[in-house]
Length: 114
Length: 112
Image 1 (cartoon, rainbow over the protein chains, first blue to last red):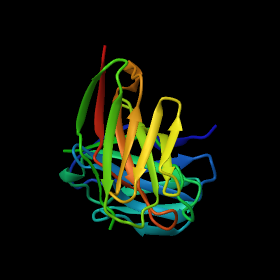
Image 2: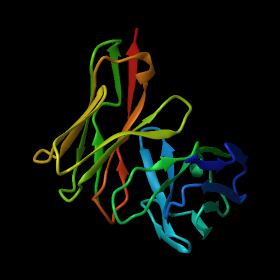
Image 3: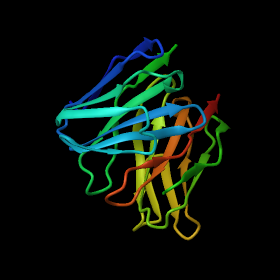
């Protein structure tokens, strides 16, 4: 079954707390992504991972870091969360980055930072 | 970098009518143009795409048109149904080596 799984679905944190968002995929896709979705802004890329331990910043990386130690797993970390990081976060994957490919999205994590 | 714009933030059509959602892009090197659908409260999923070697692609009730000269592409949905109601996102990238950049989304409402 081709699936991207995100945990948790909903998360409420206080400003200054650390946040860990997790994403897994079962398709052996090389490339994984973290996007955030805000009203009126569409989806903005935070980080992209080309494979294990090969990550690059996207358009809005400030305040975030990522970790990919296994091909099937990609984490987004917010050290000392801020209220402006309240958003819906989507993880996605694609077969590889060498050719343009369809993205497969997870179900999203709605993060609220109080 | 590439900038993708979706001009209609909302669109309302009557059931059975056609809907057209338009996008423009800025980078002439872009050559891959997918569309994604997000139903209320759900994630995005791929619906159709087009590459720059063609100017039209059809899949059942969906057709994508690409005008490279105008740097414009559009999603046409014929015989709309209530289940077509969703937010539709267009995106653009090069065929290799760049990630997809998204438009801001068009909320399509199909009214009975």
